[in-house]
Length: 203
View 1 (tube, rainbow, N blue to C red):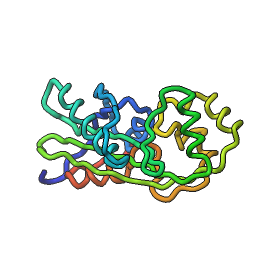
View 2 (view 1 turned 45 degrees about the vertical axis):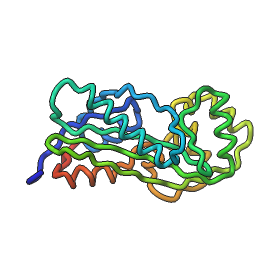
View 3 (view 1 turned 135 degrees about the vertical axis):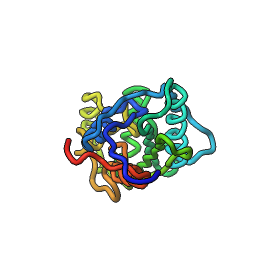
View 4 (view 1 turned 60 degrees about the horizontal axis):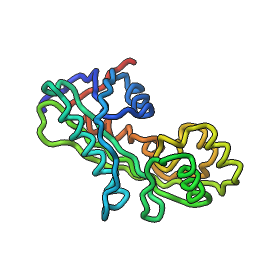
């Protein structure tokens, strides 16, 4: 892509309100186009590899649903919590969420968020992954119960969202906060700039 192309709109292949919020913070108009892709287990794939796989498959599914040529970048992402090599995705129910939170209590884990990006006029997708270490405090049963009562854990990998009430459960992080939130925003911006796009100067 030659020159610099002003970017005002991006298509998000996800219904995640957190990713939507982050992209809007860049001053972009965000069109949500959920891919309909189901995040099923993939045997023999590491948690980090699983995040990359799901992100690329979400993008593939979203592009297949497009009924017109691309006129804006399309972005898909996936987040996986990695506890000792075991992938923790979104919990099935509150009991499953409680189990995940108990397993994370007093422990360090890694959050992997991958994204896949397709842009008009460029055949090859950009695919990247970011990983951040997170350590939880040792959680009391009442803390877990109180957090479950908020309803927050049910739609989040590892049964927690660092930007919400779970901030009180986190003792330390090493790496990019936004990776834990669900989208390594700076890396997405750099990928867009590398493809020749400029972001809005005002929101």
